[in-house]
Length: 315
Image (cartoon, rainbow, N blue to C red; front, side, top):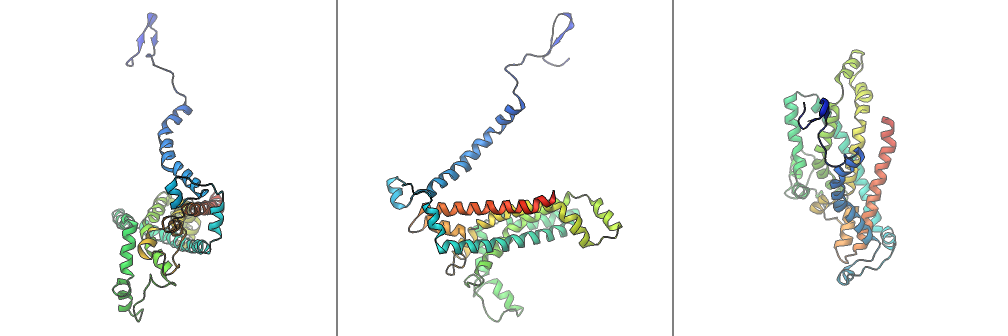
């Protein structure tokens, strides 16, 4: 007999007394998720709402002193969209995002496949070593690469000069033609480990019997990759595209540490524009918030395009 059961007359076993009414699965699910919902509301929802509020009001040093923010509607958005510097920043952002995301996805798939072919213990060591750049703080990563790019004492110039690739020092981060890519390379180096581990985890979930059967049928390596590996890891690649695009569009730390938007406006990206608009003279916080919202809209649009074009093909 289970603990707490009560035996009545006639040998009838009654269940133990329960206090209160049993919750339905729906109510129980809401109650279990309520702390998370409240946390997300405080951490994410309210700041997003307040940023949207600021984007539709005139907010500068004068308004911050008085505490009165006049409502201007969509004037901040119109002002940002009419600013040639914002359009230039948006173009740099799209170029930076396309370059970094393409390189990350291609390198992640290639390196993950190589790791997947290793023995178990060597694969673990390789994954540990690959993960190290991801542990470097973004600002520290930018400072490290700014020394590497140094025109006189930088390691990159010394290496290229020693192998005869260049005739003299090159200011990689100070040249308008190479500055944006000089920011992109450290960003890729820092974020690539996450993409590799994500793709490698997807490869681990593929049944090896599929490759064995294809090999028996005479399928080559490229055929196996194209018709087995790539379709099965495509859902993970779509997730990777969305995540990496979201972070690449909002890149800021490497720009701050390496170029500060220079030379000139060569590395002005959308997040740097929002920062300079809101936290540098004339401190137009309303316009900075509006540009940030436009950036979020761009990220959402790109994510929907990825899902529409790629994820449906997997289904």
